[in-house]
Length: 259
Image (cartoon, rainbow, N blue to C red):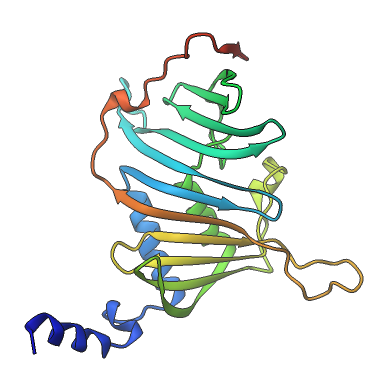
């Protein structure tokens, strides 16, 4: 028997949870996830988003840049830059939507594939709320919110996209006020979340967000379809050049500055 055949035979006998030296409970796993997000400098990945009535796919580039203030007593500032590019279906056909934040401005470019029509909107990045800048993901803050609002438990060890993952469930705590909900009422807090966390780097490969259970007559106990975010080809902290987030309005595009 060849050595590689013997190795495959041995690997086939390894139980599902062997990729984790010791399967952690949900709270311990989320501590690891939180640490990964806090130490994350940059991320590139392909992304798929599914909701009850639509789906989009594309890619994401995310970077956190630390800037020291000129004043010695001022706290260090963290600037979030990102590019999110997705393909979505629209009445005219298919649109490629690109959102780019360079830390100062948010650029939103929408190109209709069938007609070539391009529209660009620019506005300043505003606020320090749960989702500063509007559209882009600030997952660091979102993870911190989840740690405060949910109780986590481990469901199982599984395979997902050829990765060994720990499936962790978060249930919304019954008690405690939600200051974010008061300040940002447009944000909906899911009743349950499920994360598929890679054993390789403790970074989620998929997140499912379940709304509160339906209250309509005859629908009690049923969950609404989840919002699902799936990440593939994940690369963490590989270093990104500053020009990655430079944006130039394409020639002939309709340009709107909303500042």
